[in-house]
Amino acid sequence: MLAALESQGHYWLATSPINGRPHIIAVSGWWDGEDALVVTTLGTSVTAKNMAMNPMVSLAHGDPSDAIVIQAQMIDSAAVEDAHDLAEGFKKAMGWDPREMEGWMFFRLRPTGIKAFRGYEEIGGRDVMIRSTWVV
Image 1: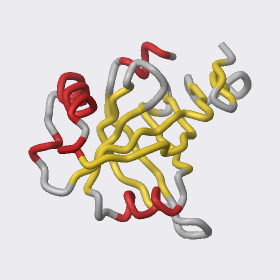
Image 2: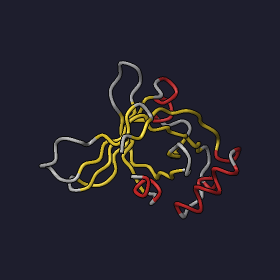
Image 3: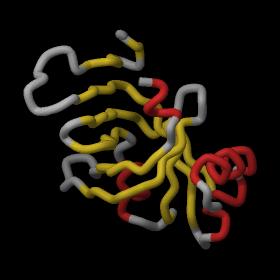
């Protein structure tokens, strides 16, 4: 599972204001090697506003034959120009620099639950992380 997170990639990120309608966008995501998935988007976006109101998010990566679904909590955010270490790590991993985009922010998302899916027929044993603790 860590190898899948460390391989870097692109995710669908779902956010929602408290008691509101879900909103989903595509994001680039970089596993920081410790405990968080780092994503970036415009600081004035619906996604950023939703996370400010409700830090609980969902991310999905892959296709039905090999997918990861992550429940996470946004633990902090920073303007990309104010987060040199995050910006350098993100740029190295993802191949582009969000500091070239005006008004973008980093959001660190700490996984609280992760499920792995390998095809439609696999039903049990999908949990690989529960309450931020690895179970595999």
